[in-house]
Image 1 (cartoon, rainbow, N blue to C red):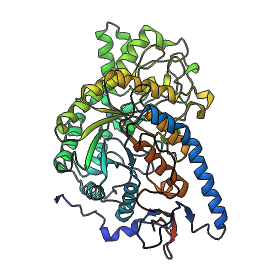
Image 2: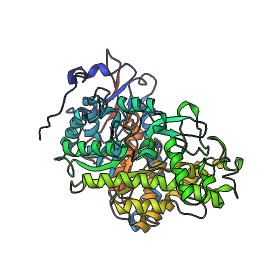
Image 3: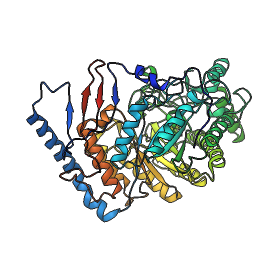
Image 4: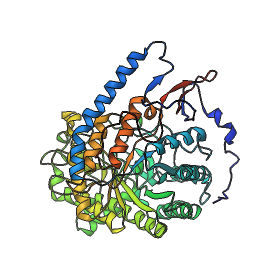
Length: 548
């Protein structure tokens, strides 16, 4: 299929992509060579050759293999006996996969990386379709050029693609390695009316995402935010109709900061929030305040609608430091119940509106729909679950906040994608009262009860066998839903380094076989013999991963 798309004069010419590299960057390049096949998967750095002997390299490899066996062996029997189903593994692409000019970033490196992922059995990749890139030139002016290049490349390698409709800003959160603000014309409207974005009690504005308080108000040059998101998704559907259900197998619908259905209650930008702070309620823009006042008046509690909780503390406090979140605090009062129901229901209605629109647009295309829910695991062991409450999840010791979300997803036939699948309770600091494992169990049971498919991601970049083993544990269906798919965060230069690459290969094999095979053979039999190392270019001094 040939796609005819609008070109931009600011596009980077394909033959000029070499200028994107700098001496300090890594480009992943995989090339073929007719050499005698090697039965070892080794890691080697040309920068270290003068210092490391071959014997030391072998010792390191043996230790790495031993670690993999130790971490994954305990899972092999459990997976074999308890869950024989295959779990496809996807890999997230870099956040800057498409450049500011709208072109595919480093196409040669991308092509090589996709080839490597395909060769080890990865099902596909995930990419963010950034609102701030695609519709940057003006309302209803869409540029899908870079995504067309990527989709065709992914299809050529026989991989599948998950595309995220990313209506949020990139930058200012964990793992954000580049900056992609909202479209300039949207920022112009925000400058005229600062209440279009989320606002905390101190008046801090957060430009990550348009406030859900104005979902149905025509504040974006005559269109409502929901209409703007719908038009964006419709443009994607119309442009890539022939790829949907084939190369493009899933559309993940962004519904908040980081693409997650939540409020931006723990913003890291400018040091506003630090782990494990409780965060703050984001209900102080004029649209949210008007909604709160109307809800309070309807409940015959007009005074409750004047503001949010006065005793909920600040971003970096702990639950017991506040009157609202402490053990027997205001959260458990009649007022607390009123406020938290209003706050969480606003979020649910926001998700419902966007998913209903997405369903109407993509129904019949063959592509699945998914949405993402954040894994807010800190203070999960406390009664109030303060950090979850400020994010909009009304989940406490007495109330299940994830079942209503799962039911809303189920209503639209949407897969619930949940994070922190790689985390263990014992890895977390005691003072933070974390329980990622308990949280995952709760969400698995909620999705099972609601009849919703569950998929997973790792919350933080991890390359170790221990993290992969935990994902294998959570992927099983012995406690609630098993995973229908897992998306690994994230493809970068580190992933292709020797031990990291070996761990990924091992993990993909284990997941694809239902965990029945958790040991690499003497000679890796994935269909290609990989030499994962670094080749130093003479003049540019660029490190590259090579398949030789």
